[in-house]
Image (cartoon, rainbow, N blue to C red; front, top):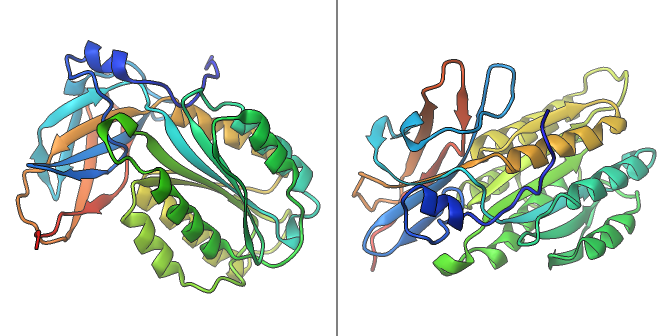
Length: 311
């Protein structure tokens, strides 16, 4: 049986155990440009039944960048602290389910660890940051309870805003390093954003943020073109950034879905390597992580943009 635990924790002990320098590595996919370019990944490993695989060692992983094997230099099995943006769709169509959404989101926020940060973003046709990044669970709960349904849906604008907000908590030094994630709940297509989806996807790919998405479908409704578009958007953003997408028809499932996301964040591996690609062309580099246990699969972000030449 899985025991619920906070999904962010200090990794110094794990790094010492792994025989590494006792400092926290950068978050997923971040590239620090000093004498070398280092890539750090948060990696989720699951068995054929979707259960998290614990207890793996460095030698159980292989990282390929553009099909070229890389040398793993940093490895830790405990997650770092996290900066989380929690996005809640409050468009008119959420009116009947907003209470359940609030309770599920509050339960999710309570899983935060003492070193984690989180913010609450409410979106309909406008974007409202109800709570700036904080460690205080009571402030997060108060903000979640302020959400009210009404208006249309600016889904792209909300995610783009959260990505921009995440830049404010991005690490500037090794001591500040933390994972970054967005968890977005929405029940339909974008109807009022002033930016295009392509801009959101590009921003996500250039960030170190992992996107988790929950799509709430209307019960017993016929497939709609609009939600097919929304499904594509949520699925693509999640896949490209190394997150996960969930589609449900009953808002009573939200608590379980948020728990699954929290469990995943609490069971990730950190891997770091220095790319063997010395080119500074800013090109997209595709990443693939493989694991040795039979039937197990690893998931992380699909790639990153390489460094550019200094001027």
